[in-house]
Image (tube, rainbow, N blue to C red; front, top):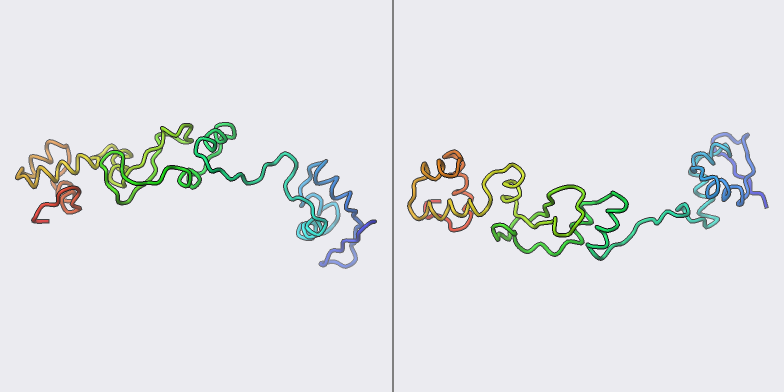
Length: 187
């Protein structure tokens, strides 16, 4: 039974489309909704309304839609085949972030990857923000910062520590002020 779909903008233009014609154009000829709307002389929204009314599946055949992953390995296998990856899905599927793998800090944790896209779970690491920046810019890691704090509290001079670790004296004072590890009494 032909359905009359009228365009609300111009009441003079009317095109008769059957459910079968819309189905044929959308699924068989793989035309977009906009393309079908052009054929019909109506808006794409009106075609969508009719498709919802006729209970058409909005996904084209062969398109899986949104996949829900519960396993990191399954998601990485899927991303290897498709070549697409989402950082938010990786964060959700990765093991709970408990402590930094380098310095052991439990504050400001991030998921770090050596290359993008990540292909194996062993390529992901949990790092604190300090160690993350150290890896990213090849600076002092959290362990070296802890060592600076410990050695400074033991009585070594900041000038000597700055020279040994290859940083400025101001950077040593910043590290001491942040208080990584054992915080000196004067900070």
